[in-house]
Structure formats: C-alpha cells, structure tokens
Length: 537
Image (cartoon, rainbow, N blue to C red; front, top):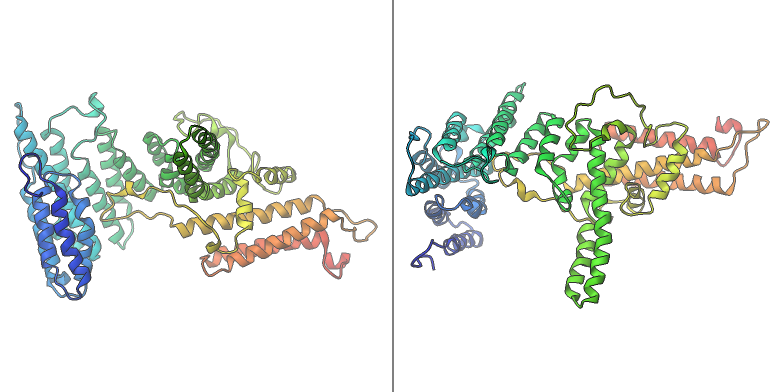
C-alpha cells in the first residue's frame, strides 16, 4: 500500500507504522521511544514537503514522545531523544529556507514552482514541530531561540514567499484563497505572544503590537484567510482593543449556526471592552437563532414524518434536544443580556454591529433608561415584563428559571457547541478562554442575582405605608412575594457556597451586601415575627 505504483504515496500506511510504535510505548513501561522518533522523522521527511496537514497528523505522537521522556536526563535538561528530534527539525527548516534566494524576473517553470512550494511546506512543518515540542517541554524561550528561526528570519521568509511564488493575490482580483506563506505569519505571532508570556517585566505590549502589525499586513495581502483574522482577534483581545477586534470579527461573516460555535471569539472581549450594546446585540442574535431553530425543527420534522423519512426526523429532534436546547452558549448569552441591559445605549444600535459610520453628537442617556433595573420609577413595570418574557426558554429572562432549578453545577446539563478546532494554529501559545465550568457558574450566578432583584422589586411594588403609626396588614399577594424573595435568597446562598463555585473575596463581599440589602427590603415591607414599627425601623 505504501509503495503503490503510480499516483501519490498514501499517508495512511505510514501513519499506521507510527501508531504501532506509539501503542508499544503506551503498553510497555520503560519502553524506549527511539523507534517512535525514527518513524516520526521518516514520516516528516516523506510528507513534510508534500502535505500541509503533515504536522496535524503527527502532533499527538510528538506529545506522546515528549511525555514518555519526562524525567530522563539529557543535555540542557532536554532528553536525548527529544533533542535529536529538535535537531532534525532545525536541519529541515535551515535546508529549506528561501529567504536569501533570488526570486528572479523571468518566467518560472511549473516544476520550479512546485519545488518552491515543497520547500515552503517543509519549512513551515519543521517550525511547527519545534514549537510543539517546546510547548510540551515547558522549557521557556531559551530552547526556542536555539532550535527555531528568529522572528526577522521568518518575516523575511514570508516576504520572500509573496514574490517568490508567482500568482495573483486576492486583493488584486485573484481567487478568494489563502496565500501559501500565511502560515508563517501565524507562527511569528505565536512566537511573539509566547515571548510576552515569558516576560516578567513591564511593559509587555511591544511584542503584541508587533504581532498586530504583522497580522494587519498579512490580512491586507490575504484578506480571505479566516485564521489570520482569528489570530488578530486573539492579539487585540490581549491589547484590550475591542473596537478593532469587533471590526475584524464582522469581516469573518459569522452567520446562522456559526453564531453558536464562533461567538466565543469576541463576546467576552465586548463586555471587558465596554461595548455593552454590541455585546447585547450579538447575544440577542444567538437567542434568535435558537428560537428560530426550535420552530424550524418542529416544521421540518413534521414534514419528514409525513414523507416517510423517519430517521431524518429523529436526527433533527435529537439535534434540537441534545445540542441546541441545552447549549452552553445560549445560557451564557442570556447572562450577558441580563447583565448589560442597564448599560445599553439605544443610539448605538443605529447601523447594527457592522456599522462603520462615526457616531458623533450622540445625546447622553441615563443608565437603565431602556432596559435593566436601576432603582428608578419604571423598575416595577420592567420587572413585570421580565417575568412575562421569562416564560419562553429562548428569552434572556428565562435565565431566572434556569438558575431557580439549580443549586449546584452538577444539576445542570449542557452542550458546549464552541468550535475549538479553528484555533489549530495555537501551538506554542494558547489564548485564555472561558472554561465550561466558568461559563456555567457565571451564567447561573447571574440568573440567581437577577431573580433575587426582580423579586425584591416586585415586593417593593406592593408595599404599603403605615397608617397612624400602625403596621400595615400583609395581603396574600404580599406574603407570596415575600416568601418568593426569601426562597431566592436561600438558593443564592446555597449556590454561592457550593464546592464547585469559585468566587474571590471581593465578589463574595459584594454578594453578601446585595443579599443583606434584599433582606432589609423584605423586613421593611413585611416585617418579622415580632412585627412592630420599631422592629422595622
């Protein structure tokens, strides 16, 4: 199979050889990794120049090799087998570097063009191997400087690829394709971010600014490469440049079901960057997606049953029940809408998320003027509307009911629909993103808090003033709302003190203060067992 006549060599049989050696390493304690390293090198020599996915094929085996040599002595603290692998990779990128090659001004033959592309693929593959091994070793920047090309070298390699590989760039009217040298820019930005993470002194922004500048130039040459834009969003997130990151996210053209899988790239940054209206708008689009999907699944499943396609109907219903309805992104979006509602500026909605028009002379608005509870006279009407809207699972206020049914994260079933495979280029440095546990705890905590605030407002709405210095009598409705608020306080205390919830000291103090204020509202409106005006005062 491996040496079939005619056509290209198959990768599968050679991957099986690596897998066999990997199985031996996993099964036999104390087994050396020499054979595994030799098979990895053989595979890289054969397919590194031919297939762009060569590194993705061997990535799990590189990690296994490094993990299997932990504790083995070697030069400079690096095990001998890992060191030999790094030397092998370094030799490959040095032999295939084309940075100092004359591009020439004549026509290039098809054979020469193929050779140039092979060398570029081999160069990128070798650098990826060095990055992966360095990241798994955790040895810092010293090893990286020793075995990988420097940033100026890689930048020169990328610039050479723009002229050395003839073709029409997309910005000049070419096809909507990525350029072969784009991967080098992703590697450079990884290097710069890794250097920033290793630095202990301030400032740390100069490397990030350099990474942003390179990505901007690369996006100008290759405007249809989504991974350049995703990498740029990650860099701008570290620079807290929310406006530019949002503009790049809009250029990605995320639509429909992609909202559920890709919005995590920008949504937390919008909140941190103060773009609350944009955060509400994006979160609301996710809620609308889930609402429309639920309706469409019912319609199309019904039609499938009518036409006899029973398996298709079952697939649609299963998808809705197991993926869409318990979506973690849906839960997180509800929490963001509820938290940012009072901060929304209606004038920012003109033009939507994609608006590039300057907003000047925008009149100032008060907090909570449009949405949210802020202690104003309209809070009671807003609270009543929140209760009405909470009946639909796909409205943001339904988060109150989600939280009311949950006193522990273990009680909540969810489906994390985020697509993390789009970050495949994060080899050396991985951007910090919210974990499943963090998304759940933040969202459910928001639900508990907003549920308590709504109940406090509703109780205040039926409060009665004392007459002639006497305590007013409690109506049935007042008692019901009082008990509802007390139950919400108890659930919030139970949830916040759970073992699976991580809250820092400042957040806990603010939470305790909020609970104390709501308890004071309940006491003033209804009183305690030994009720009297003096007791309430």
